[in-house]
Image (cartoon, helix red, strand yellow):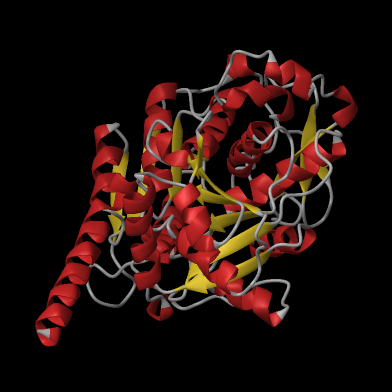
Length: 417
């Protein structure tokens, strides 16, 4: 494999054993745990001063802290996304600054591109011919795009509730789309677990397929950690007072916290950025675990999931111990808000700031307002909101909610008259 100088292996987060990345493309062969790329930080030949002079503006500007060098990357220029000042939101929230990290500007419109870029690079390095994964939607679309870029075949397993855009573009990129029927329940009600079951059955029948599934490949969270490196660099390496993250599987949050720890270890920053989980009330297993003081979540049954926010409708996030560790180690928190509050927040951002926030992603906005209402933030705090995907990913949900709001407002006016 063509790897970066400081990348020394894959460490199991459960048993602690280290493995050769050339030999292990997935989970720990000893205990089945998640593998995490490990580095010799004394061999990281990079500094903030060097970065300031670097012209590369994709996520690969941080290649010394990634497993693969930039010249080996399967890339379409992902990363380098804007950090946008939101003064109207800051005033409404009662804080010093609100900044929105706009991941909707990535090639397929979401932060999933960062993870798939790293995972697909690993697939190429391992000599894969076909990749596969299950997804709630956006990761499947990103995998199809990056597989096309790498010249690989791809099989993408999505639940029926996945969005039309994600299904359509998966096929447009040339991947084989498998829309999965529910295991029991009404037609069209299938969840991420149904797609996961179909994916697992397919992998059993095709041992030569290479997985780019969340926390099966060791590289999805590693690609997404670059969001934190960018954010810190954009803030001149001063950690914000809060990062509010719309959380389903939590891959990006885990990666971002890892990068914040690395930046502190390298002496680039003095403090960790507090990470806050934001979920929908209709599917909030991580928030429930945090509030209960638990070390991991209690899985929800599919029929317990009650949210229109498809991207974070993950009833059984397998890496919840890592998410909870990141939140507690960074002195962050967790919050859940209603679908109505989330969709209202997406509309308000569009109207107050002109920015297009995905319906699912707006959980970070509504969550931040709820946290501010609880007194979690101070008047001088800098609060960063992660917009993990473009608003046009969820245009039907946003327009439908707007129509419902307008109908209610009209009915209220009629009553007053």
